[in-house]
Length: 203
Ligand code: MG
Image (cartoon, rainbow, N blue to C red; front, side, top):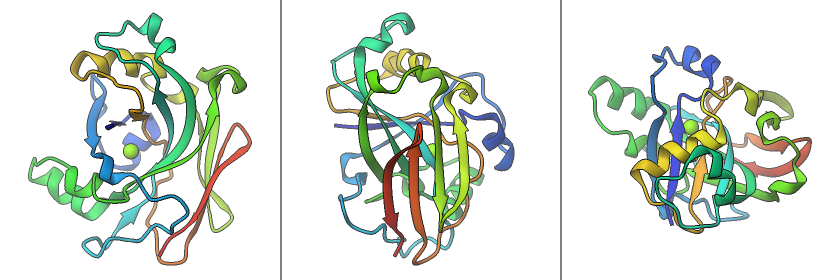
């Protein structure tokens, strides 16, 4: 399986990192080795001095598809989740300055944390899903999917122009504003539509 991630999908987050709003979605991929092991803490990798959380709504692909039209995209996923795109921001900034790919900053082992999956039929309007991340009991990121620059179905249509989607693939749909640095012993908790999706400890 593969993990396809969307960057720069929320205007306020583009502004907080001084990025330019692109005309098309920004895409990058994490390998299956990036999936965090369940029930283990997240370990800050030794090569980063500025590790950030990015909470994101996730889609789990349940049909093989290529060149999927936006109006049919809903047929290709039936589970929605919440996860964290862990990012070595110091490494990413350096790679961006040099015009190099982001994988070292974004696709390292354990960088894709996946919380609980919810059946999409239980979540109501997917264009208005609320979600949040608490750090040590305080909400640091909170948004809803209506703030996405590209909707879930538009993301699937765009991504499937380039990559065949396969059963079990996971799409990270981008992070809203409020990213921040993590330190040892931080406690993270994610909620999707008011339901707890995960909790984890940083080590
Ligand atoms: Mg992200």
